[in-house]
Length: 115
Image (cartoon, rainbow, N blue to C red; front, side, top):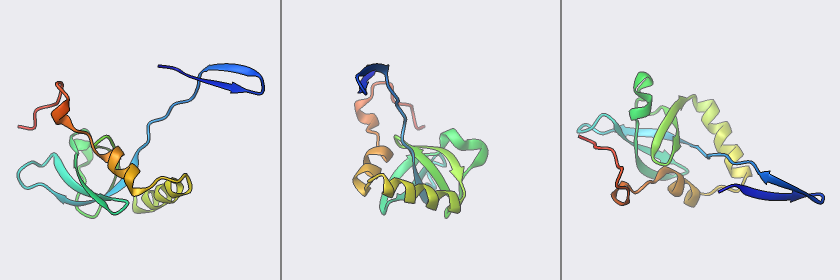
C-alpha cells in the first residue's frame, strides 16, 4: 500500500520506503545445520539463516547485515560499527533488533524447509 505525504501544500504519492538491515556479529554456526547461525545484534542473540550468503560463508567473529532473520551480506567490523552508530542516532534500539532479526516461520505457510 503506497504511503502518501503532504509537503508544503503538495500531495506526494508513493513516498519513500526502505528495508532496514542491522549488523550482527556471528557467535556460532550450528553444527547440525551449516545454514543456521547465532548472531549478536545490539546485545540481543538470535538465530539467523545464512543461506543467502553461501558464496561468502561467515565464520564466528565476522559481521553480517541481517533482515527478517536472514544474513544478506558480510561486512567489515568497521562498517558494522559505523552502521550501529547510525542506527543509534536514528533511535533504533535492541527491541528493533529483535523485530528485524526475527521472523516466525511457524506462522508462514510458505516457510522454507530446513532439511
